[in-house]
Length: 308
Length: 170
Image (tube, rainbow over all chains, first blue to last red; front, side, top):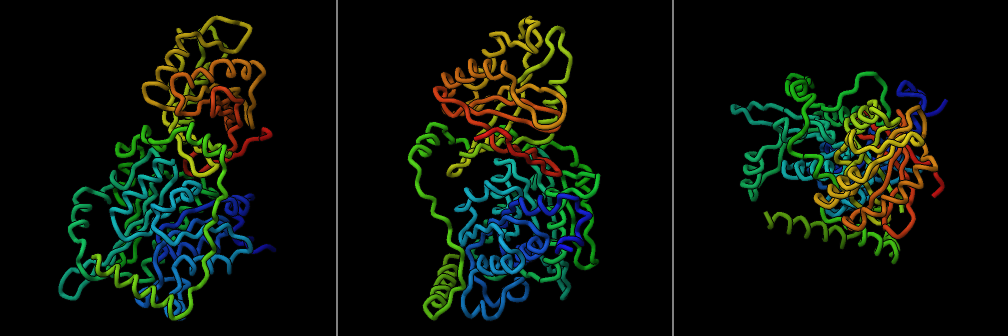
């Protein structure tokens, strides 16, 4: 028996297909770390892991794979994700990027699927636009806790599959100019958004199911636009009404004419090819140790807080 | 250099449907695909945007070949490349299933007209594709004065994704 025998229903060549797949994960916090873990178990072979942050104590309520020792050692979220994957696969193809995704576009272009587990609508909008330009399916997950007043809260979230040509995050109303403006106006407001591990788990698991469907279809019905609403109070994850309404919609926000890089010039590409520069592989991350690195993480945190 | 060609399933299926339409006198139909481009180090992505069929009247009668484009067909494609600054890929189908290949005639003809696109849209690569019912093969020119290179990898973007690699020696 092989380790993937229990998932053989995914198809006779599913193990090969999953191993050949490469996914980009933008955001390796509560949701992203769950996706890392599950895709590692699933057998996906290639990863572009993107997150600029170090683990902090407030992450340990939900960051899968992160430990208290990692907090003490100021380990990066990318390093935690990589460690988790290397514990599950013999030779994963990992490109770790301890940076914002804007500085990882070359690596992300090589992905079959990009998953966004980010906090802001602006980032979602931009990542999706990048994915659309490069004809890459984008999966978005997110959760939020809404204060209903009187010590009552609503845990909500979404899982959305945004396929090139099909309805996008703007088509389904998740991204609106109003939300982007409100988010921009809140810049500088103190406080962190509530996040809990079990809700992240529901959303992340569903996203991994979509990844599996995209890479190794295991049932006949193909759905190219998915919009699932999560109600954490009721414990439901159900199709949003717009999922059916927008099923056949051609997205007007990302027209096909926008595919590609508008500044691309093959003559420049040829010039670079004629003078090859040795590619500097991004180093595999190693856990940061020592007083000085811990101090550096603290300084970075303070600078980040003062910029808000 | 690794050349990738990506196209949505919706567009690819519409192209196949169009190419399978009967023509009044040509045995085959042909068309052109426009594409955007992107690159990262040695990887080049051709990202299909849209398709235009060669109009019925723009074929030449030549029973010795499957299809022969007239000068107006090529002029329109050149105009498209110039006005929109896009890569242009000639496309036709050989039908059947499995990995298709260009015929000797295909290779001779594409070597004649594809380099001309660099006269009016030198900032883009151009090329040619041949389809089957479930696969595709292609050549890409990065320079009008140099030989073509094979498109190494195809991705049909849909649910599920469908990817395949070229069988042509690099």
